Length: 313
Figure 1 (tube, rainbow, N blue to C red):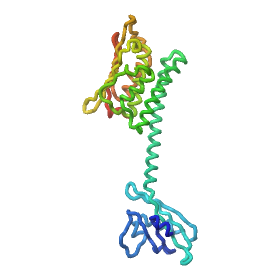
Figure 2: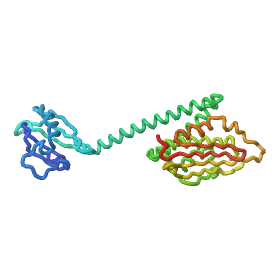
Figure 3: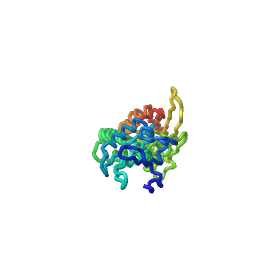
Figure 4: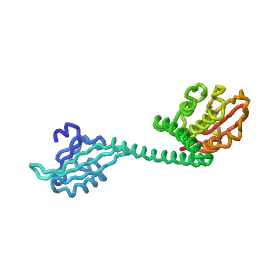
């Protein structure tokens, strides 16, 4: 007992009739400077006293014990541990220790909230993957083509998710997202992607879908464009603006096409695949925005505008 007192433990000793014999180190919530006749009700109030009385009623034999938790305000949680102990003199006594569980319960609440968030985000991600799988299959003429494109899109999502996780799920910065989504396809030509404008922190939902749009654009540039032949840089710009009281972001991908070899742009080939569906429908709908995807003989332009607060998860 002296050791517990030295450690600052909150201790109460009562006789078999629940009369107070000793009390020390009460938590600040119940600390009383002066009291003539301490009791559970005097120290802790009628509600807590009633719970303690119910707990102590059956403690008439040595070794009997029990506990209750009491919440004070919104954050403070205390555990009352009561045990019947037989003293050499005086018979059965009730020894109560009070343990502050506030920090522990706070961590538990955070963990539960985190698990709910993980579940929520996992369901969202699975829904995105399911949609990508279905649409990729729809626009793939063979299993090999499906697997090739589907793996690339899954990789895009995983890369975006890495940025989101690294930021404690706050989201991803646009320029990091652009760099991450393009460097795999242009490992030796990173200088061909030029970024300018506002490097905005996107929400997790916007990060995933903008990342997917960037993936489709860079794959398109490498597969059908002339970037590696002409080494014309692709310009990615972003600009904040205010529309109808909402802060918006406009992201523009501007890719100049090269015709040194006299090859014409196959507009139908560029437009008739899942990539155009992602760019024109899936991404803008997912971030509550709008998009313009324009292909001409001279350039490919993609313009995505969406509210920064409207990219809801």
